[in-house]
Figure 1: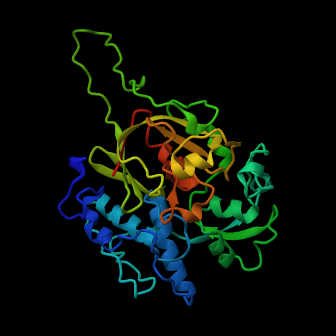
Figure 2: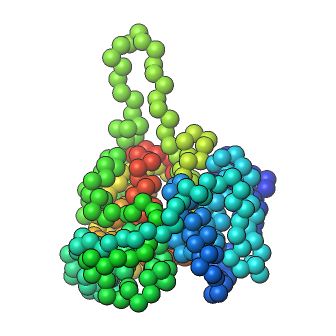
Figure 3: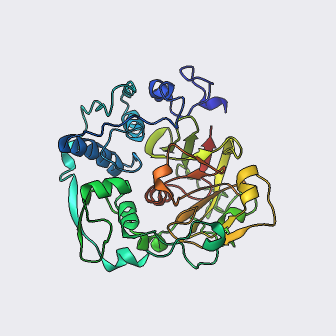
Amino acid sequence: MGRYRSSVFVAGVFLFASLAAPIEARKHPTKKFPRDEKQSPEQIEAAARLQIFLDRSNFSPGKIDGHYNESAWKALALYRQSRGEPPQPPPAHAKVDAPPDINGLDLAGVQPVFITYTVSPADVQNVGKLPASAKEQAKLKYLFYRDPADAIAEKFHCDRHFLEQLNPDKTKSIKPGDQLRVPNVEPFEIGQVKDLKPGSEMNAPAANDIPDESAATPEEKPAPSQNASAPAASPPAMPSVKIDTKTNMLGVFDGDKLIAAYPVTIGSSQTASPIGDWKVGGMSKWPRFRYDEKMLKHGERSGQFYMLPPGPRSPVGVLWIALNKKGIGIHGTATPDSIGHSVSHGCIRLANWDVVRLVERIKTGTPVSIH
């Protein structure tokens, strides 16, 4: 843990050394910036343009909502860090939706900010009944989106209320052929999840019911040399993941270089995320989830549980990235609005559109540091 220490941070252990000022101003990650309900269309577009720019750059601001929110400020700070630039301190809470310094950012490349999207039949195929209780969800074969607006908002990485704001009186009865105004991002295509090729894909009764793995994985073991006299080739650099529990941000590193960052939700005080150094043990698409309330609330396994089916509104979303600690993983979510300012049951949770991008940058054996 010592290698993550920096004298500019309180408590001595933080992930992103150059974020001392933003982190110091955010000791309470559940606190949100107040919002100005009288934003002009120009202000909304300017904030959304920055959020889209960061999203496209793989420094995710979380849900796009047309505000300079806390996640956008953190993503921008990490983006600047990745370029060797000093991050800008966050605004005082009294200053609502204060625009950050955008000097040097190619925001002109985000043009247009919003596009017109025609709803397709596939967009409504994953919409259906979604009961609130785990008992009733366990009776289903699939956990659907609640309604078409839920599906479209996730597809374009945006807040559902923002989708409604962009499309007044259009989101209550969406059907194929309707045209909606949406953020100009690379859409999250739920149908393509099955085509993802994560390293060492797992098959298990439930994603959170996989045993600890202490042995080296095949990817970690060196391949036998075909020529004993030839000098050993340098292995390709292994990416690494660092999760900062103080800022609720996950960073992906190539060596020492930060190449991507995503907002996350971490464990609560009752079921804390496991501090320490771990490794990716495998990945599972469309995971089933063992819903054990006693385990989730108190960390104690019981015989009273429900096996929840897969689907975009599964509690673990569309992907599970197992760590070499039983029951703990990095995964998607049923509630993207909660990412970055809520708590989980010990795991690390991302928006579905971010977890599919994360899985493209890691593999089995990837080191994961949680501090």
